[in-house]
Length: 247
Image (cartoon, rainbow, N blue to C red; front, side):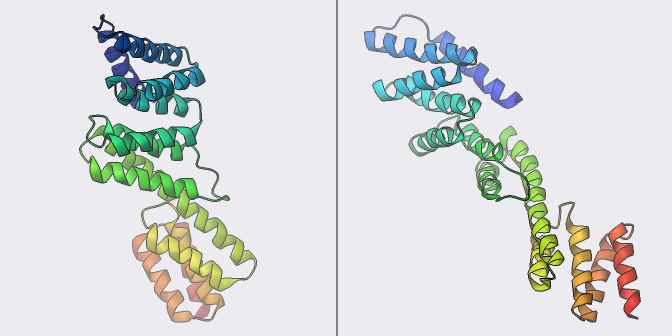
């Protein structure tokens, strides 16, 4: 990902610029350890890189390198798809370095860790909800950053997936003739996911279920909303046929 590569490049620059001899042997030691982690990361040896960055934190917790290592260790875990470990490292960074210049990136990468674990709409969507919360933090706390702009795009995708999950369950209930449970799911989409691509079908399903339940007024009202907002939709045409059948 472009933003992640850019971030890594910046840390490469930091490591290179800091390779001059230090007055303290301890500082030389921690710098070598950090650069060892960076070299492993550059070779896609993510587990080794994470181990080196963890050692920087553990063995030199008060050095300037420890702060960098928290974030780089999280990045190494992320690249190695060890998302839980990455999130733990990011949480430590966020907790102990809230004023750091890279704090926006930390929140953004936490969102990515959840985002990469999102599964199909037929399965539990807890990672979708967690990714959404993390990206919202980026948007609210750092609205003028590139991370916020990308977070907004990903939020739209997550919303569409969550709406799809509700639709999948609603269709299942409808097929089981559990009409009230189905109606509840479709109503969630109508009320909470109005900007997604599922809204038209959700409105139609409301019309369909209201007709089945004999709630003619509610069916007509839902059909009017659908027709007003999506006059050219196939779901509008189907809804109008259902309502006309009643007349």
